[in-house]
Image (cartoon, rainbow, N blue to C red; front, side, top):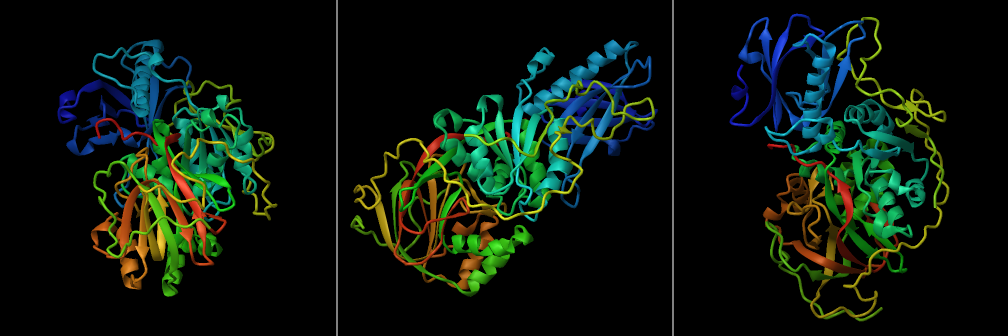
Amino acid sequence: MSPDGARAGEETLLHGEFGAHPARGTRYALTLTLSALHIQRLVPRPDAEQRTVVPMGEVSGCHTLRSLAPGEPAAFFAVYAYPRRRRGGRRRAARTFRVDGDGTYEENQAVAERWATVIKCLVRGVALGGNTVITPELLPRPRRLLLLVNPFGGRGQAWQWCQNHVLPMISEADLSFNLIQTERQNHARELVRGLNLAEWDGIVTLSGDGLLYEVVNGLMERPDWAKAIKTPVGILPCGSGNALAGAVNQHGGFEPALGLDLLLNCSLLLCRGARAPLDLLSVTLASGTRIFSFLSVAWGFVSDVDVESERFRPLGPARFTLGTALRLASLHTYRGRLSYLPAAQPLPGAPHRPLARSATAMPPPVPPHGSPLHRAVSDMALAEERGLHAPAARSPAPSPSPPPSPFSPSRDLDLTADPPQPRADPAPPSSPAPEGPADDLLPPLGEPLPPEWVTLEGDFVLLLAISPSHLGADLVAAPFAHFGDGVVHLCWVRAGVSRAALLRLFLAMERGTHFGLGCPQLAYAAARAFRLEPLTRRGILTVDGERVEYGPLQAQVHGGLGCLLTGNPPCGS
């Protein structure tokens, strides 16, 4: 197969013919482009049906290997990928190639290193062209990540998924890490308040959205918050609520996914290492407490389901389906007042004005440091040179099995042991008041709002103020939202909606088409700030899925205040 026959006009970066391992006698032609690795079998029989295309978006890394046989002149390189199966879902696929075109090991090793370097550059998004001089110096410095895992996340499978899927993949991507199991509520919040952030290139949570909420607010509670909040944060979904991971998955160009498939997609994106600005909402509660949100503020139906479904947590994400059915059976309405400062410019694709036909404008309202790192796992004390030796085996040949694990347990944690059992959480310690930027668009709670604000009063079934596109891994509440757009997306449903119509809205939200249903009770507005004043005496308010005190609150968007590890779509996509 000629290099030019592998792609539709794409530039060829590398082309070569190599043997296979462990199959002796089989040979392949490999062609590498910006978007994919093309593999064509040459021996024993060239066959178009034996052609394999590995998209770079499915590749986690590449390592060079050396045979343990003395005097073996061949070198090897292994490509690690996670292709989708025909019936959905991803599986790990490692392909090992034998470089034997030259007479000495040093010459063959140079070829293997060249291929590994280019593949790693494509994974990391390093710009390459046909005239680029390939040297190891092209590769960025290996990143050092702090991984925080909640072993009780979701259905209690976070720890198992972390060991079986996440750690092997990030090892293939040459990421250095330290992993810490959180042991109680607000443990992550305490940890990040006392960290030396200069040691880390990012903080990644393995849980639901709640653990990242702790991390963000812990960073904002530091004296150096302005610098600390620029530390890139990421999320690998192992919990019940995986809304931000759903948005990251969509941003990365993948099809919608759930469960383990979503985790593998987000892990692949983490290997790519790209970043996006993260808008944060500064939320002031009735007591004057200030917290920071990366996801949503909810009141009514959504917050009721979120909190009331906690008793079904062992069901994992299915808890929300059951909670929704129960709440639909006893649908409540809440009276309140919503005020918001409209965004300066409408977003492309978003409604240009509120959709609620019964909305009535109202006059302005009348006034009414650091814990020790426990249960840690790290790869940083390992002395071996990753990728220079094949996995230990009885036969003197490299193995296509997973690469040697670059992580080893510290003395206080046994990776083979069962995860710890849940225990009663002590009362969460008081947190220092966050610093943060000034909310210059917000007067104090209870004071009149400026005249350019819009105020609506009435009976609501739900109100949702959301920053990213997703309310859940499979719920696209704001399909026109994107990271760093600098606005909060307000969605509300007025009283008078039937149970059937509300159910249709949530079913359509799985595809992000709910605004096209023409529901007269559904409304939307893009805002820079908002104020919510519940007039019903009892209710539930949540911020990023966490229950907060009930009463008036207000919030302002601070565009791009944080930094999110997202992973760019692969080159050529």
